[in-house]
Length: 466
Image 1 (cartoon, rainbow, N blue to C red):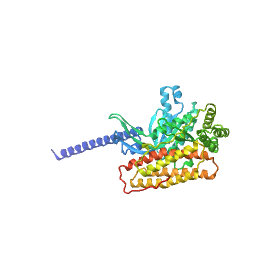
Image 2 (image 1 turned 45 degrees about the horizontal axis):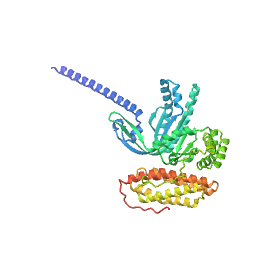
Image 3 (image 1 turned 60 degrees about the horizontal axis):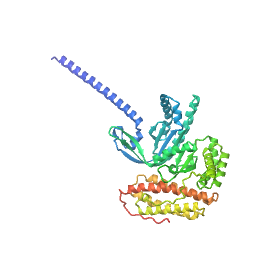
Image 4 (image 1 turned 60 degrees about the vertical axis):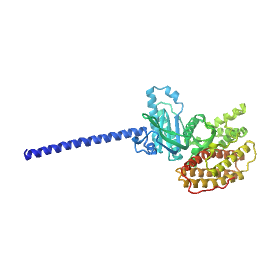
């Protein structure tokens, strides 16, 4: 072969190699583009935030049974009267309507760092890890966006829609469930069930946004919102009732101001209704309705008062009528804390008895006990949590600080002499009941379980708060 032919062959070979390399590069780029498109598509089904919580870099890293525990604020929202609305539409129109509505809500939730766990028809279940304030602000913005969306529907000749939103905060397990060929992400815990029940409660009181005491006490800036004590409810499957609050930031300005002006009357009236002091509750609700004719919850309670007068039917929890008993499931296994909790339970029962029997309350002694409980039990718990590197210590301390702020607010109201003592006794009882059911028997037991796997480095003692 001549030198020229050899050079030509070499040049041809190099050209073939370059062509092959070019095709490989193109194929690689196309594969990367397809992978990115696939990852983007999967992210619509499994949010990146959820993958991050499960410590997975991508969807391929997710395995059946992956799970992680977090404190979350859980949101449930639902369109009111969706069934009759959907019956007037074809299946195609139903899909178009639901997607139109959900496309309005999804960006709002994402903007507040919420994770949409799932869509359940027209309902949304979302998780907020960055705190109750993000969740509540997200809910308020959703209702604001709904007003904008409804304005567009009315311009197009459609009826406006209403939604209900329930918020609850607590510890949950996030993970994957299913089988080898089909699995899904899910969130499990009492906090989830309670959030769903609160969304259902919005239908009873015809108010768009209800939060639990768990979420209220988890807020960094509760004074930044317009809210009022709405009721004590007993959730199906739960023995201990909980306090719920109406958030009315999205009411029209005039209605919002009227509810603010009548808030004290309304909250006292709700308390007296639960105490069956209808002669004190009724005129207060009448005053609320007179000053605020569009206050639907006040109207509902007014009817309840009149029904009680006529039939003696009372929609209450009757929790003051029966003493709480100490149960094995309340125990943390930490003797000093269990002793403090038993003393707290005893105080709750004593206070309930005095309220029920219309006895005088020694508020000075009561608040002194609460101060001692905080001054002794809280530092002891926090010391143990630091020793055992409890991962949720910041949130736990946050709850301690809010409890202190709440009881001191009640103490300040008592010192002012401007409030009826039986009403203040009832509100103090509710604070202690909510604290016992949500913190003492849940949050404290949670960190106690964490301690079982981490022996203490030193022994701490707690003086009695009796």
